[in-house]
Length: 131
Image (cartoon, rainbow, N blue to C red; front, side, top):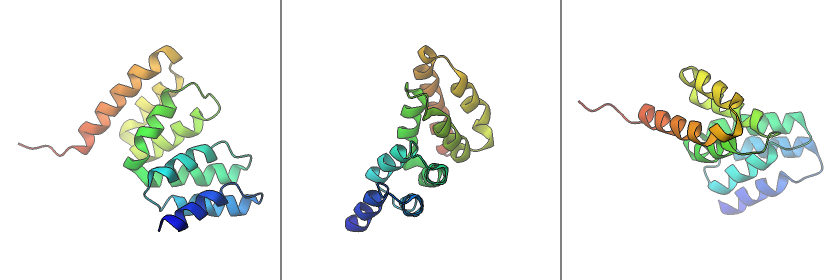
């Protein structure tokens, strides 16, 4: 329900790291855009446990989180990018480890085009081959 999702998103702002960690885990099972945005913000949490739970939650949300993750990977937020790259690696799997690693090390002026190439590759992977 929207009320439950709202409560979990609000819990991400709680002063107790354990409450925030549980909220992040719960949001990883909620398939809504606002949960993705809240989890992306939680990647900046002061607690390692909350950040780690947010990484796993975003990876669990998969395709719903993918556009947001790719935008964050191409962005200028250098503090959040390593965690975003970790989520992408977890979600996309072994076939995409090298492109994700290359994107992680890419200079800012190349990130946007590399992100677009990665989106195309992911779309190809997710589209069944029809012969």
